[in-house]
Length: 179
Image (cartoon, rainbow, N blue to C red; front, side, top):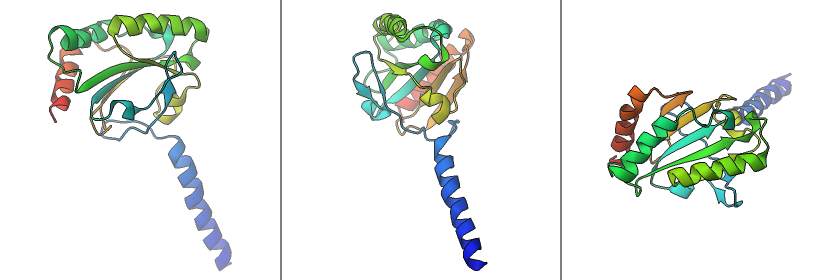
């Protein structure tokens, strides 16, 4: 009986350890679990590709790709025109949620390539909905995570960011780059 109880307790720890690592929900104040995705040229990227930088991760269902265009234009202006945010300290990029759309991957790569050129950024591809599972991001949505230099989530947005909040998010990014 004692052996059976010890086996049962050990099994519970093992099972919770296995399943607990699979679905880490990203939340403000939580360190973001690592991932690896490729760009259109099959080059691999992880969050460490931008070590020491504050990062803005746009996780986008291609059917919603225009949803936060005003926000991204405001951030791009703060970086490239106003020079308020330093490219040496900040990187914004997109990860395409290919699993959430009916569009073929070849079309997605063309659309993403145009966005990458427009915003002078990197676009990665999540063909299997990895961040839906790993970070708990919703399907069929446009999600944005702002992570500090240590990869701790400082802000999460699901859906459209109201234009009235653009400056507030830019100020958060500026604050994080100075930490």
